[in-house]
Length: 313
Ligand code: UDP
Ligand code: MG
Image 1: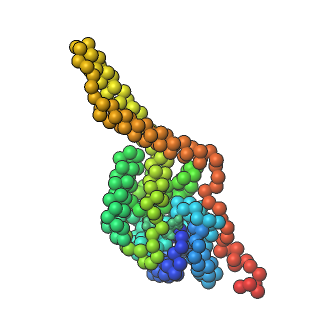
Image 2: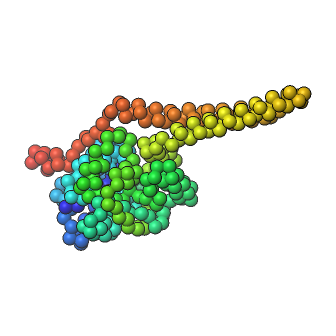
Image 3: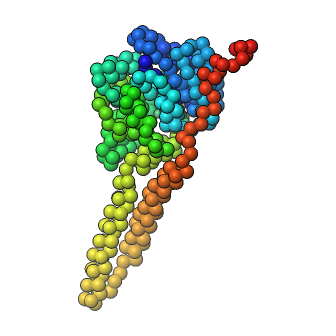
């Protein structure tokens, strides 16, 4: 059986379209399946639609988180609830083409443990988003050796890979990174990312920046080493400058250079603050892990709806 896990946050009318489309594709491919729809604390009628679908269709299971925990947590909730032999994670806004699922399943049957969809294009993203996304993926790949270039969250994980992923204890999970980090036999297919079918993207510059910082800090301590390296470079520079000043002073040359002092002060100040910021990010990460709070809380499950007293149904 294939489990399809989809996070939903204020998708409104898109939910029905999404479920219809998926059901169509999975049924046509003759795959036995379940849809695990995780409502990430939507404030619109998304959950009512999920619950209604779950009531009518035994293939559909719904999970409502108690508030908006963010996409990463919603995906995790879905993965933990999934019962299939393979799990496909897909966005619920139809940007990830469901038609690719049968091909992913074929690859899995041929022996791949993880099938990743990489994007051939980036439709529905502005220039800044495109460049930003690409720059981040390249930087991440360079710093961590976990290949994220053109990666998406649209992935299939076989049961063993899924179990491995769920064993990772960290709180701020970064699905795209962790599902690569685990290794296993991998395969990639190319997909076209479609523009959103409706509604709008929930990512703001701020939340994307957080995702990027979280992703990086949970995968590498390279930024910390970078701070050390920059510190060392400045120390070397200071020694050279000190020597030069001393020699000129010995030669009777008066020491000038007010602008140099200001500039150095500014540069040093900037790097000091940046360095502190980087350390702060890691400290925050440790703090979060140490607190050990659950990564999401479930408020309602659609299975519970089915057991309501008969007169309520
Ligand atoms: N999503 C979520 N919680 C959030 C934000 C988004 O579950 O806090 C879901 C959303 O419903 C969609 C997917 O994550 O299925 C991708 O979100 P979105 O389309 O806003 O991001 P983009 O495609 O622009 O990266
Ligand atoms: Mg989207």
